[in-house]
Image 1 (cartoon, rainbow, N blue to C red):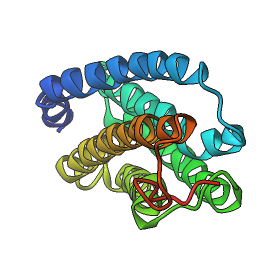
Image 2: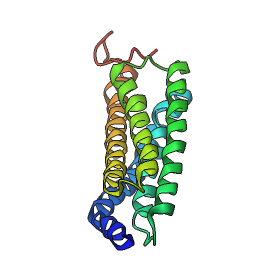
Image 3: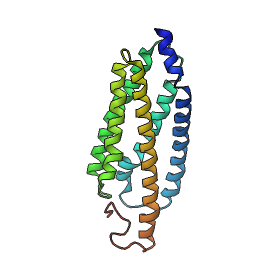
Image 4: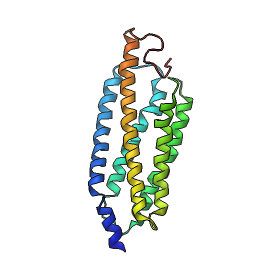
Length: 192
């Protein structure tokens, strides 16, 4: 039975190499983008950053951590499931904190898409991750698909959110700075 579980882990090798490498590379790009955006400070963006920018690094970091954890040559699934369960519960708590930060920040008013990608999908991904730790012993294959699915959701959420933030700064904030933005044009979040 132990060999069957270990072979199921090894079947995911390429998946986690690709996903983990992507998350690691995207973390680096986030630092580059933040450096470029920091040269153009915007009022009240610190509180918005805690709600909209920092979570991307946390999600990419969670994906990178999961990729590393699932490539460790575990003897049993017990430790791996316990660790991805801790990541899931911690991420779930963090995603709820992010939702609160989104609600209370005053830099701009989040729209449905913001709530979906910054709150709902991360909560779902971390919940899937946490719950899969409980079924790992009885349904190992399904649990591994749950972990893989949660990792992909977090990766794509981070990509979407990073793109959304960059495009907001380029098309809305820059346009406002240059006096090009007309009321309601391109400013879907109702900033300031």
